[in-house]
Length: 545
Image 1 (cartoon, rainbow, N blue to C red):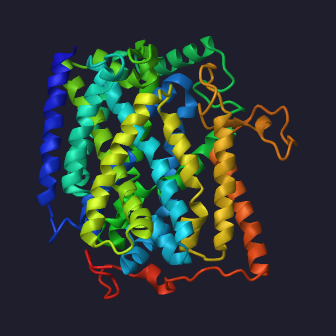
Image 2: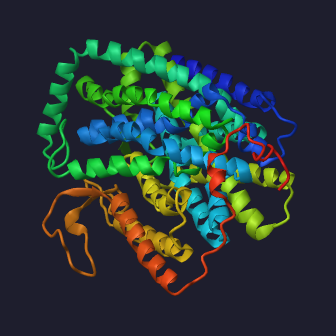
Image 3: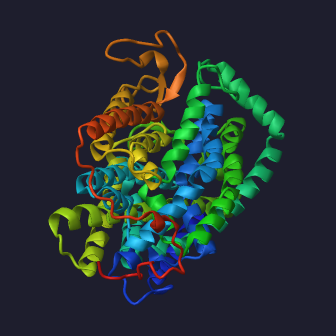
């Protein structure tokens, strides 16, 4: 048991817990019994709060744990997260301000609310809501993987269900203050989380390389390791086989990220279009941090870091690479700060994700199909309860599923959420697609994507299914025909699935238009997409609906 690290970690964890409960009083409106207030923080966050909130939401325990672990295990492929966060913001800059405007005019809380208003179809909205909830679950689980990795490095590494007990305790606390304070809790805690992360990473990338002979020596050690374990895809440089996969994974991940309901939650909670514009300019500062962080995977190779054996499964837990690197090479007190940064880096996004999933359930399932005349207070109560269910569903996900690389969880969710691209992102600009085209495209893309993911085994052969998102072109078939037979070049499954989605959507749309099938009623107006906070058309916060 690493007592010094555990004491420092516990102190900082207690600090953010107090902040989480205090957040219920921070910038509070007239009531928390409304989704505008509980689920979107009153829709009034300014530039700084939004920067910390969205940054805390997007750069998570996934960043701290999974990316360096992938670089440690596979090399250059793990750096896909860097270009995707570089190209992300120019891509989403304009769509996000349009989404904010139309949502403020009509009081939309979720992307499924927008889809229902845009197409007048509660069935299409239901598909989008279910996709958002299901895709978010593995993303929350990813945060738990990061938190558990830290706990194991501090000595809390029991076997069986008891081995997960510290995780249960942490998430009970998280569940309680999220239930009470809503989105204000992670918004306030994100300040502490980001300060800790910046401090730890800046110290790590300056101090650790000097300890192991500089970056030149570190890269040499990494290359020696990959040369000693021959593979078609690993190394400190990309190979001919994984360049296409790297590019499509980066682009697909960039398109998917702001389709996640939790990403849109942070945007819809902001005060106005200018706040979003400033954040799309400022948020790439996190990408510099991400690039430095990914390099710690190579530092761990040079340091000879070994993953801890998970006593619950009996197998090495690759996700403990970075915590073990910090624990072995930092003073105990600073290692405790680093562990707290990772742990809090898991709690902030997990809270936002559970709130976003709860909003989807409440607005697009509960109110639509179970209690149509639910009051705002009843909606808020339902969302609070749903956020608890989502959190502990994610805990169950971790207890019963043991991924070798936690990043696999997020990649599966990415393939899912990418299938909402035509219904959500493209619909912000055009209503050309027919409802049934969008539905058919979703089914085609989702079905084929899950089929391809199911048939991808792990590199070591221990997991036959759902062990990654890189597909060899040789495995692609069209009704038995293999157009790329014999090719070992890999591609991101999500890219293949969304292309099929769009092709089917186009074909069915053309057929539906030719046969004059009714295409729903658009409740939005072109001018709705340009409204700012000072317009009299903005729906008041916490207004009845």
